[in-house]
Amino acid sequence: MTVQQPNSFRTGPDERGHFGIYGGRFVAETLMPLILDLERAYNEAKADPKFQKEMDGHLASYVGRPSPLYFAERMTQHIRKTASGLSDGGAKIYFKREELNHTGAHKVNNVLGQIMLAKRMGKNRIIAETGAGMHGVATATLCAKFGLPCIVYMGAVDVERQKPNVLRMRMLGAEVRPVQSGARTLKDAMNEALRDWVTNVADTFYCIGTVAGPHPYPAMVRDFQSIIGRETREQMLAAEGCLPDSLIACIGGGPAAMGLFHPFLDERAIEIYGVEAAGHGIPSGQHAASIAGGRPGVLHGNRTYLLMDSDGQIVEAHSISAGLDYPGIGPEHSWLNDMGRVKFLSVTDDEAVAAFQLCSKLEGIIPALESAHALAKVPELAAQKPKDHLMVVNLSGRGDKDLASVEAFLESKK
Image (cartoon, rainbow, N blue to C red; front, top):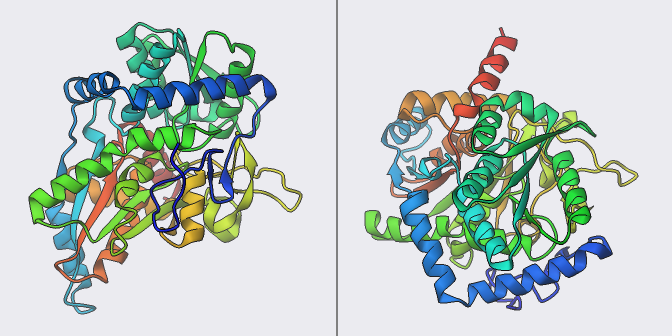
């Protein structure tokens, strides 16, 4: 296990799964043997060239990697035109096109690794949680490919607002279990999945979709997603002959963001921005911005920034984006915030929907509402940069699943 070094942002977590004060393993005693088995199996798999070779083969022939790095010419021109008079600049915008992966999002990168690990461990029953449905779809897809039964826990509210993905999961053979407790969204789906795991320890593998949960999940999911940043590095060098100057990604738990950020963390000159969901606005209390509106606490097996009331009880999150509608953030993101390496911003529902529309009309790319949160900050940030500034936005998923939600939101504004 690597140990964090003071001169690097890339070597954590420590042997106990901590990034500074964040992370760790806060789980029921019943789960500790499973967590330790998982850590051992993952460390062995990382050291096994055959595991990586097989994974690389599936990433290329099944997932469709590498995903393109795309110069968003019309958005770049739009920002420069809008900024004219304010400055002579306007960054050159690139999209990392994760929405072109098989299943339509970044989630499949991590799920492939975890399902291969489950098979390696002899676990023949897969469970997962999902919010926007993309992690559930990716898990159902890989379970179908490898012939494994799949159960996906999904908040009842998300089942309604993400019906296309529910239909996809069921078509792929997965059982979707609506969760009626709490706010009936992502947090509650994760609660139910953890309960299932405790009950069925012998044959069940819990495929977590984000860089949160008990160690080793935050580091493991990050490692599987880091292919995003590694590809971006190579592709930017090929396209421009240098590394990007800034990176932007949306953050709920934060797997897509961490996948892009991690390979660049020690390039101190590169600016890195994570964009949280501000919902109806931070002052309203109806948001999902854990860094902007939360404080450290423990949930779902790890210590991280959480939305809590004065008594330490978890406050329900709100975002128009089901994938960002979670009252916490990955522990490594919390640490990077405290260290000042990543700057966290926030975007309201209104701003995200406007960016959703702008990207669709300018680039012919309908982004996920999650990705639209990152896109909403691009005009503001890019307008302040010179024309030779290279900015990469992680387009983490496609927006087919969100069309009904956006239509309803726009109708409500009339």
